[in-house]
Image: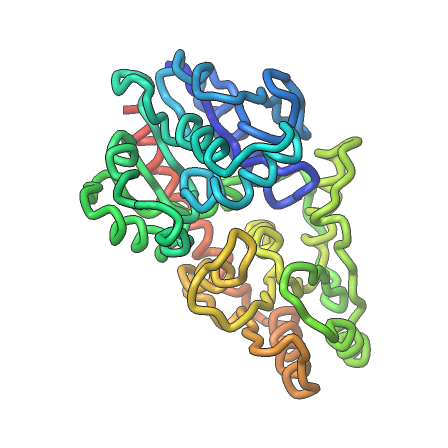
Length: 363
């Protein structure tokens, strides 16, 4: 069996590297021929390396047709919202100006195999977010995608809302095809960062996604209470030189902290995976309106029965009382006598999803 893995990939984004690296570690362990692809982010038909992961840049689905299995791994790539948003931006950055229809047709080809032989490779979608399906209803006829999704052998969305949305918009998809997955970064095995005693007075901080006008008040309150903020400033700007080593360095910093305060989805996921409890700030939203909006963070924690770690904000300007309540959560996380159950729950969810995925892939 030979396998093509199509990654989301985003240069310098540490969270997306953790997703890609999880794929690399998993597929290299299976004993089959595996190649890794992206449809943007580099020169067409080039081979480059992102940390430890060798990646081929393709511009159409042709190179994928010679594989027995094609796996679309992680994030939003098999959801049409990706075609209208991130994918369009990435293609226009690297390939020059393209019309919306040109980008959408490339997406249909690479990620949905439109027009390709039905007798081609088996298709799998793993750890994808479909929460934004409702946001594209005014841009296209979603029902037109149903025959393309029906060609997939398995679709395992990364969260319960994505699973519900996919089943709701595409009721023709069988229950056996659409099953619950998890975020791919939860599948990343233990990294060679060793163990160390946590510094409970050190709090890792990264606040760059959710608009907060006075985020300095949060770190000031940490300091006032005797904590030392450790700013994880390179999370979305990891230098390409020694990329993997820099990633391990960030993971080590996260490991050594008493808790994490962040508004960034994959930093929270990686902190949970590493064993440091995050408090996650986000807007008080009830729907995902873009690939970077906040609802996905709340859903991730809710799926792990750990919404107590979510600090919802209704305004960009935090009152002193709200700042205090958020830092109360951080203090509780850092000084908890028992390990927060989010860590064990994430491991259990990842193990269940991985077992289901491997059974389908290797059948």
